[in-house]
Image (cartoon, rainbow, N blue to C red):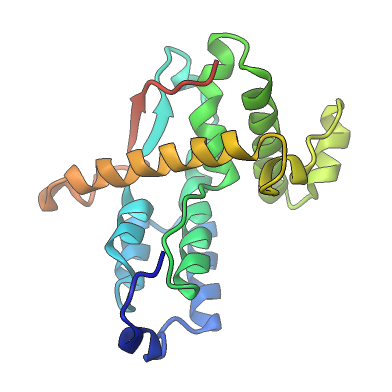
Length: 206
């Protein structure tokens, strides 16, 4: 999906490679999403990208939501920023959400009841990747530590992979909800006293 007119695309982006590295480094050390959004807004960043970055975490509604590890919430902003920067370079709005966000969204559901096989494998795949980024290890090292049969990347990210359709559908659903929630927030509420903002909604994961 093209976001900009050809004349706009011909204009050089202000987000150089060094600027992008700086933004990602800031996100990784916990810089607030509204500060990052203000920096992104210096360039031709689409409003839906800003909404995706600043929107709440839309988590599966469950009494177990409070048990979600805090580091997962904290990792979501950096995940979103990386995705936005990749999409912005291609002048597109995509459908992906990062592994930390997928894990955070699905975590309460894993405590409610057994997930369907496809969503269980998507969750395990995302959790391994999120933990790998957090610890600086490879996904293979995480799988080795927890045991069990690794869920191969190709099953999830390859368009012909067994779980790709469900993965894409789930990511798209989450992202639409985030953007929609962000669009509803009034200007006076856009900078919350505490981050992250979390809303719970029912997701079909069983």
